[in-house]
Image (tube, rainbow, N blue to C red; front, side, top):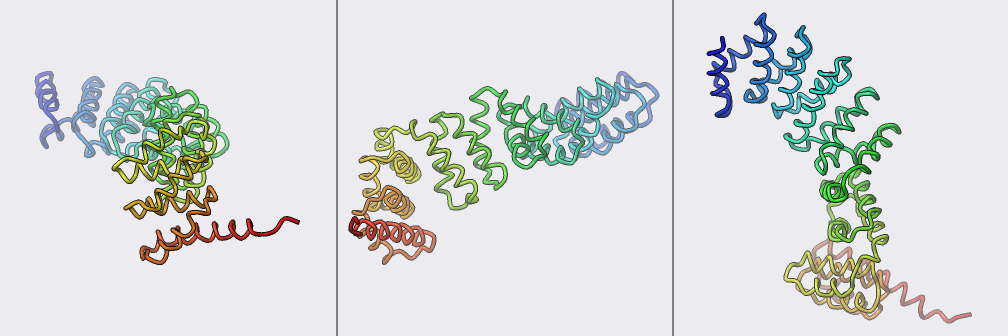
Length: 344
């Protein structure tokens, strides 16, 4: 028996199990009378069995009579990189056995980090779980650092009141660098529910490192409106962190995205430099930068930009850009009309 397991272990260390190795371990896990044999089989199936091992390990998790084997199955499920294992692990987290709970939590953390959008998939399972499991699962997400932030933001956005409070507590515990990194990644998900939470928290952190990400969220037409609105509000709160001289230099970049960021950030900051850059942006060779300049000029009330914006509307054929230019022109026309009304 020992020789057999030594051979299987050596094979597993080289990658996936062969069909024969997988069949042997499955048979041992299901039928061996020795719990140590079943335990080792569960660990090896988790380490090298892949998604094929998920149903076998779930059966052991639920039905094996020895707590150590069930705990090994939970740990093995965390290594399968199979999102189907999330729900069984969450159920096991409600068990009375502390060993099983601990290994289930460890397995859940491993799984959340190894599958695409793992933290969000974990939250989807937690949203259907009892309050006790939700609390334990949110704590697991909190241990993942930046990687757990998307799931915590989802809980803070759409969870029940208990889940929202616990999620915000876990977010508050994270080191600032991990929190900011996770929030920036969550913002990029362009999710109408959780990305606005990330934008608001980035603004609350008062850290200038978030400025480019928030500017991109505002200017990205594919972002949900709720995200763009919250990102702009965050930028307003961070206006003190915007350095006009730095943004003026950023506007000289060869990268159109950098120039757009500079225009938008300066429009939030305001001032003479912002007005100058908005006018320069209208002469930019990139349409999106021109549109950003038009919006900035409208925000700043730069009436001198109106003739150029009108000229651009007459030449522009790309519908989204044209709409931005037309809106900017109307806003400035209203301001121009208001400025001509004589004082009473």
